[in-house]
Length: 188
Image (cartoon, rainbow, N blue to C red; front, side, top):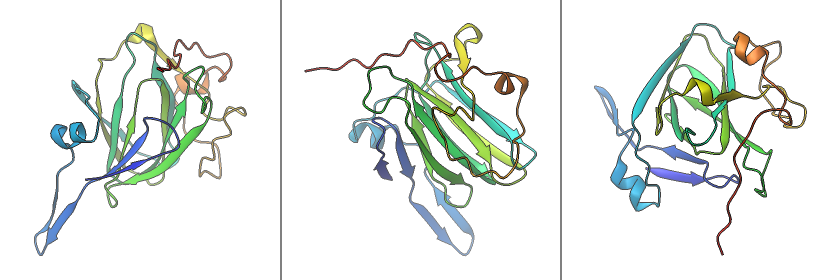
């Protein structure tokens, strides 16, 4: 598995090795030992699966407050998405910066989004399925969101019109108004 480090500390892109022949292909999508060898020791406890019928559906930007924060490992198993992580760790040198990558059934890339980051994605095709692992259960009382189009963040979403949003995402607070208890702790 190829691991690409991004400019946002902790956010990584995984590219699994794909073995193909006349029958089709095979790939290993998760291997705890390989990740651990690369300094990534996360105990995922739940797998989630979402379906979006229409191109232009935007889900996010979502996160859970500590102590119920989640690390996510996201992959797109049908169609394609533009997947985004935003650093919301106060005191981080990249606070308020974002990273985006296309994840698709074709490229099989995955995005690791650690605790302290908001996450969202935009469907680039119709009939999209996204699967992701989390290391903490969903907690409604800790669930938060940030406006997808917040001008402070200036995320370059690849859309030409208004995205399809849930009521939650439509009414999400701005980046500066969103509740956030993540603080980057520096060690010497």
